[in-house]
Amino acid sequence: MEGHGYRRTTLENGLRIVTETMPSTRSVAVSMYVGAGSRYETTEQAGISHLLEHLLFKGTEKRPTPQEISEPIEGVGGVMNAGTDRELTVYYAKVARPHFDRAADVLTDMVRHPLMANEELEKERKVVIEEIASTGDSPAQLVDVLLDETMWPNQALGRDVAGTEESVIGLTRDGTVEYLRRQYVPNNIVVAVAGAIEHEEVVAAIEGPLGDWQRGTPSSWFPAINGQDTPRLAVQYKATEQAHIEIAVHAVSSQDPDRFTLDLISVILGEGMSSRLFLELREKRAICYDVHSYASHYLDTGSFAVYAAVDPKKTVEAAKALIEELSRVRAEGVTEEELYKAKELSKGRLLLRMEDTRSVSGWLGGQEMLNGEIKTPDEVVALVEAVTIDDMRRVAKKILDEKQMTMALVGPFRSEKKFAALLNL
Image (cartoon, rainbow, N blue to C red; front, side):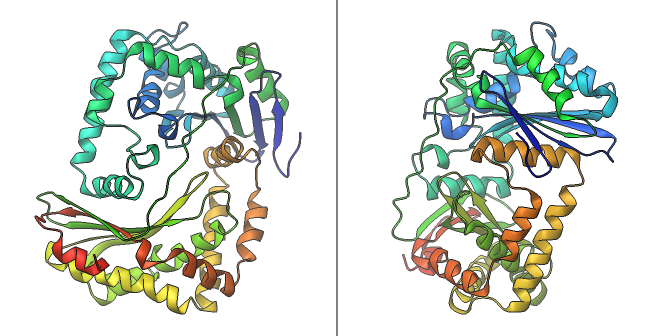
């Protein structure tokens, strides 16, 4: 099946292969997406997707040591890595064009034939626990975790992707292998390739090692539960030099057409040195170094957040300023000039990404895995261009509701009282 600039083939076992030929490049990027992540996990399994991602680098039947996994790619100047998120896991390699077969062979071998040796699991369990500990030492990351826990309490979406030390200690080899066999099946995998290569060559390279893989019945993700009807506040004491503030509201999903409008609101509020938050908190008030906003989109929900790191003595002032800027966008909307600049920034950022083979393979694979369809950059540019001032006002009023705000703070605070007053709690 052909798309606008990309091609798609679905093997008999359900595995999808999507490619985009980029003849002017000298590289090829291969990305393998799996429908596995923290949203697929029970409380007892928290962190299993992430631990499994680590384990796939520890050896296969053909390449029984971690060195034999990494050396074929690194030895030719390529890069290889992986990442686990809430809704998917991705393994990728980027190599010079002559080494495509090598990259495809290593990745398909890792995903289909991992050894899952118990001694390697025990070693990697310790590595993951250290990774979790590093988050505890990073207040900027810690406030993200605290915010999610407060917005989506007692559910998969509110947990750290890596799990907790307790949950990771409780993961067994049998349980991890069972999870692997359930989720890592061809009809739950997308292979995306971009670079100086033709579709037919990619299909041949993937169908050989994976074409006879039997399809399975993977579990689905746990839906989000949003029972919030009043503001929420969470404060975690930590003896830091800065206070880390994050304020968020529930927002739109990745399937909602309003996602493009919200992304533009985020650009205007807090993305870049000409954004409202940067100009107000950094340039005008000089109370912070880092201030920004971001929108997160999931399959059935989303969030929009603003963040600032400030001197603890300035925390109340900064939090008030953040809330005031959110309220101002909701009450007054944005100007035509702001909208025009936000569109140009968004389009430029997207189109520049499309010059990199790794970014293009991610663009193809992520959309195919999560949405079952792929929008081209030109189609997304058209959707961004179609956003109007009225759209911006409508979405801002719908999303930026002070009664629905969640505030998370990490810093040297023993009491929540002065922050609760900001949210009328």
